[in-house]
Image 1: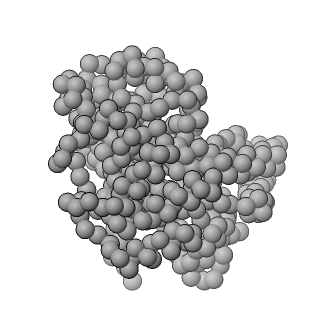
Image 2: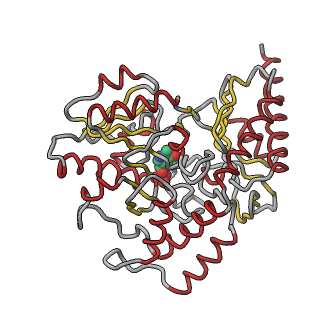
Length: 395
Ligand SMILES: *Cc1c(COP(=O)(O)O)cnc(C)c1O
């Protein structure tokens, strides 16, 4: 029977029906070790007990009321975020794209309403990914997401990562902010150099620009800190979170410094569903678990173990060009396309994704065990060995 869905996704021929911890089951009863976490979303594993209990309790109480009322859960979730980051104020929405959209709107409004300047342009970086709304796909530095959507909104430009002269040359009297993904996740797991990030922050100070860090994928403990920018000794003016913030319940957040609070006044931005009692209950339980169980530290330790094992066991394989990462976002850059390896992994019971055509991206949950990492590494090594042998027999 023909599907009633738009064909917007190239789906794998697998239907997953159950998940627990690091494991997923399909409708045929096959079991998979999950090293993608729904794209960095289920950071506590599947159906984590504390989040499940809190959501169930909230389902019995209240689901939705509208932001025309006070929502006590929102205050709690926002305080958890500000207590555990450099931010002072939070706006809740429902996705990463919406969080970035809010960040772009806040940056423009701050310059235009608070500072009284004609600044609106956002500078982003080639290969970045910021979302699929018209503004965020325009901000995105990858061409493929823009095709067929002309005309794009004005006020965005991108320059290559690590090209400071190009960045400074792109700054004009109309520049409002620089928006940076500190680890370009979708783009290929490219990690920004510490010096570059500090130079970007210095340029922002020099020209009076806001620094926006997109932490939609890198946030919520995955990289070994609550937010990836904490590795860099900088404090962004604005940053965004979404993927790992509520263990799979759709939610996003835009976080900013105190001096930006007044840029958004009543009615200047909003969302019907942003921060519902249900979404914020999932958020509270998720963030409490990340903080109380010291999951950023665990992600750092497990990430070191995973990277160490990969580096040790993949050395000498000509197909592997680089193994890089921070905490539990790890990329294996290869000499050619890796889409087939993803399918091989699925046949052997391991789920992972790509990042660009040639990079394998691993995103296990933050509670992953060393045994599970060993299993995943064994499967990865065997499929990369097989692939290397096949490539070598062709030349
Ligand atoms: C996934 C992602 C987004 C978009 O998030 P959605 O929830 O799909 O809108 C934005 N930025 C980054 C860095 C992402 O990884």
